[in-house]
Image 1: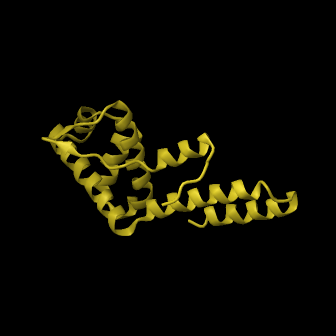
Image 2 (image 1 turned 60 degrees about the vertical axis):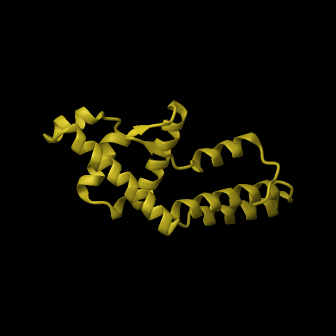
Length: 146
């Protein structure tokens, strides 16, 4: 890949969207609080793209856990099953989301599109106001194709 001088706010946005996957050891997360937030953001993004591919139960548990911030115990008591069962459903769902992304790469393509659009927008800033406005309008159309 190539490197360009990009303003800090753009680097930050791309970094938030380009979160790496984490490994787990003996069922215990080996990540710190910042990585937990990054992982949560990534799972939420993957969920946005691949939600229709999950079962109803997976969708429900993922929404409760990642979007509504329920604990495993709260979800378990709501549905009358064990915390371990909830944990296994959530981990299986996370795995499935990562598998879908590995095969389809919808999130990666989306992030690449946004990154490219941000670079084009920086270049368009140097154009005349009429040309810059036209380019920015076309960029908005490209970004919102999904």
